Image 1: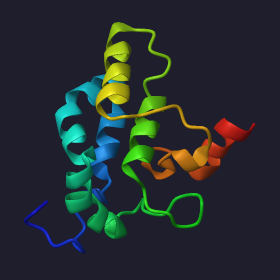
Image 2: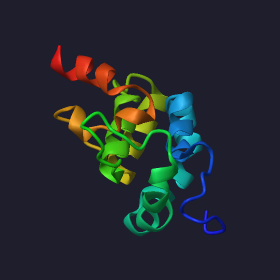
Image 3: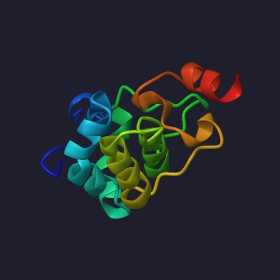
Amino acid sequence: LALFRPEERVGYHGVVSLFTEPLQGRARSMLHYAARTEFFLQRDNYARYIQPRLGCSAYTQMGDGGTQMTRQQIANTMLVFVMPPQTPRKLLAFRLVVHRFGAFLAASADDMACGLHSTSTGWQELFFN
């Protein structure tokens, strides 16, 4: 990413693709992409590589009218995809997301990165119905 200017779109959906790939295969993909995901979720790396490029992403806008995705929202969204941790693989992914990515159970859709895998309407249905 250091080779591209911040205004250049990287990936199919922009730089957010770095976080959507681990969600495609659920726990297996999350474990496979763990090192890369953890690197880009670190505060300094997120500020340097991800945040400047969010404007070029197809998923920058959130359900609340335009807040950019935060590291915490991304981690919280990943947690939803490994819940409940009923298999050994899901348990490993659950521990990874909670302990290394810093995810916590979200209190509302505002704590989620709705654009990663769903629409804000879908998350609102999950939390408010």
